Amino acid sequence: MKIRHAAAAVLVLLLALAAYWYWSPFLAVRQLQTAAQSGDAESFNAHVDYPKLRESLKGQFSALLAQKLGAPRDAANPFAALGSLIGLGLVNQLVDAMVRPETVMAAMQNGRLGKAPSEPPSASPLPGGAPDPAGDAPPEKKEKARWVIDREGANRMTAYAVDPARPDEPNADRLALVFERSGFVDWKLTDIRMPASTFKK
Image 1 (tube, one colour):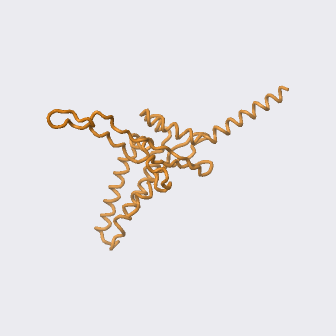
Image 2: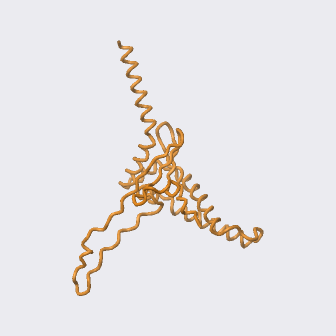
Image 3: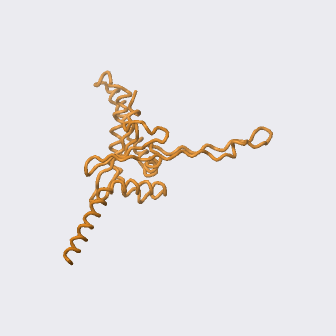
């Protein structure tokens, strides 16, 4: 009887570990959302690989720059090479400015890379000192993005930001956060994929 109880306990433990392992990416996304909403940068940063994020975005923006500028007419022209170097320098500065905890935390909340726009100021009084009735109305709050998870094997997943105003748009047109397994149940954000519309001419 004792052996049966022990075997049943081991089986329950294994099933619990398997369930925890399977649901761990969803829990990681939820932890990041909670940390972003509360402004807990320390907990948020524990699940983010910032060097990989920078390399990912530098590659994407470098490709975008090359697409927008087009290939140089004379690759041997030193001025063309100088222009490319200046462009890459600007990309590096842009990415370094973007990949900061506050910016990535805002992307987690709003579904776009960049800080949320500030609320518009209240309307000014009408001429003659009469208050504007519209100024008393509370500002309309933008609904936060929700995330849909796409598992890509056992060690990788992608979370797509769903804009409440455009719930039917394809995943390619959404901001995507890519996570990779780090240990048994821990996950880290390693890549941010810009929407395909960013790269359209």
